[in-house]
Amino acid sequence: MRPTVKSDRAATALSALCILHCLALPLLASVLPFLSVVVEAEWLHWLFAGLAIVISVSVPVRDALARKAGFLVPATLGLAFLIAGLFAESINADETILTVIGGVLVAFAHLRRIAGHS
Image 1 (cartoon, one colour):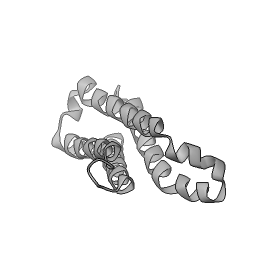
Image 2 (cartoon, rainbow, N blue to C red):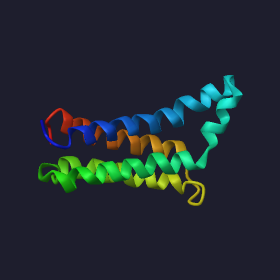
Image 3 (cartoon, rainbow, N blue to C red):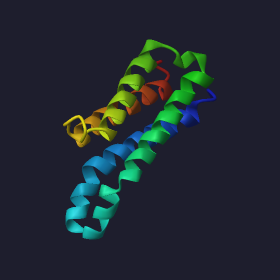
Image 4 (tube, rainbow, N blue to C red):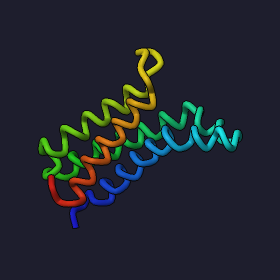
């Protein structure tokens, strides 16, 4: 087993959490208003993005096989979208769209590695 499989899995899980946070929690918050605190917590956005960045960057640093375009291109684009989502308000963009695109790209990159495709 590659030494970075755990990191790939963690990054995939964090990406899924970002997507869930953006898509499912707002719907749940409309039914359960106390969840609106979690949906709107800015620190949570920064925490998810920060962890995703640290874990995703650690993969190519620790594993030379991850230094290929098949991983680096979608992972880098995904992280760029996640970061753009953090600043969506200041760039007049939709935070949810940016974050979901970023989360999907990061998860895709790491799932490809888990499956042995890059």
